[in-house]
Amino acid sequence: MINLSQKDLEQLQKKGVSQEKVNNQIATFKAGIPFVNLVKAAVVSDGILQFNQAEQAEHIAYFEGARGDLELLKFVPASGAASRMFKATFNFLDAFDPSKESLESYLDSTGDEAMKKFVEAMEAFPFYKLIMNKIQGKAASKDEEAHLFVKEMLVADGLNYGFYPKGLLPFHQYGEVGATPFEEHLKEAALYAKTGGKANLHFTISEQHDAMFKAEHASAGPRVSNNTNTEFSVSYSNQKPSTDTVAVDMENKPFKNSDGSILFRPGGHGALIENLNDQDADIIFIKNIDNVVIDQNLEAVSNSKKMLAGVLKRVQDKAFAYAKQLDQGSVSDAEKEEIKSFLEQELNVRFEENYNGLDSQGQLEALKDRINRPIRVCGMVKNEGEPGGGPFWIKDDQGNVSLQIIESAQIDMANSEQASILKNSTHFNPVDLVCGVRNYKGEKFNLLEFVDEKQGFITEKTKEGKALKALELPGLWNGAMAFWNTLFVEVPLVTFNPVKTVNDLLKPTHQV
Image 1 (cartoon, rainbow, N blue to C red):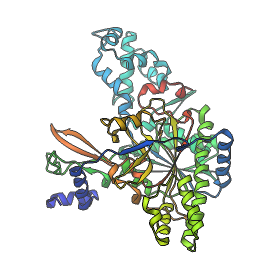
Image 2: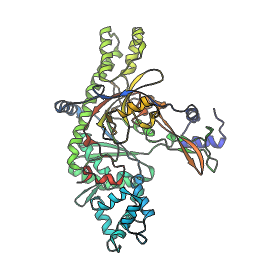
Image 3: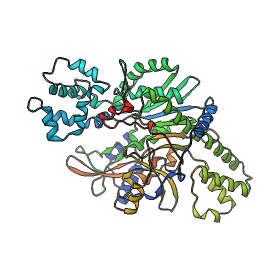
Image 4: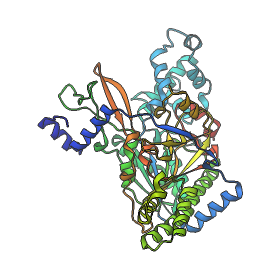
């Protein structure tokens, strides 16, 4: 226990953070978070399912057959700001002065490949015409025009894109219309998350962008509604202040701001498990805001999502029947073995070694525990060298083996055996999840009960010149879902088109 002043306790109360939570987080800093223990990479036929076209069509048909009776929701983490997307262009704006040197000599001397590509392909950006109309006649040379273009794009009295939420930037240009990721997610939802003519979407956004998202919905919503014959119900939430984590000094005591208050920092995307837990539907589709496609690829993406939903619905129907049977009692030894086999073969569950030594009641309890969990079906794409989490079998400190999405930061790269397992992995996670969050009675699980708190991250930062340690919560699709039942399914590369830098908009998958 740490000693907190009255002022500290008032601050905690205002944030909605319990003293117990702060004590637990400080205990985590003291103990440290160990690296995960990779057993092996999940691959096709050992942790990743791969379906041929006929099988994919079967899963799609299974979902379509059940769809009319299902409540569907598309959940989109959308709080990311675009500032990181424009890192290279911000640097360029600071460093390049067209009155002092030519653009060619600047690019040669700095070796700035990102800006070279940006300038050479400027006309292909979806906002090219918009910016050129604003700066027309203001530049004396091509070099000055490039500088003015970047300035107009980024600065506060220009378009201010550097401070936009990523979801509201124009990503794709269709004739005169610049479509934002928000609009593209509406189009997708109309294809695979609609029942009875209505599609439900939930976006997690930053508080300061609330009005901007609502304005975009008012502008783009009617257009997409008319084109897709869909009524959209869109809701929003912000990351909760209570999910911020305490920062500590190098002696693991709460780090104090200059005004004497405790420093709290945002807990990362893992905090959104709370926002997800506030939602309720039969099937929830999860996909990041910047992973959108142009119209010509919508059908392929939609079919992939329907396939994943079909896989979920099929396995869920079986799980529900078995869970009901277990609740009703009178399960024979043969039936117990059948249920155990289903959990192992179809839900990738690994039982503890002492399962066979348990008495009949103990085995029933173990089966009930493992079958009554939320289910996630995660799309996995073949590894093309993109950074991101990947699918692995891991072993916890109790010796339990499970299927997880693990980030490279969780892996001990100094351990050659662990590094080798990472190197030999074949697939990675594009954040493409289809989730079942209800039990067989239709009651929603409390998702906070299935988080592995030991899968967070501790990082070192500085504030006002002083060193501190920060705690990031277990990632939304990593440790926050660690105790879900998990299936991994190979999906086509066309489903993965993230925009991490502005130059990603130049890729063919984002060019209309």
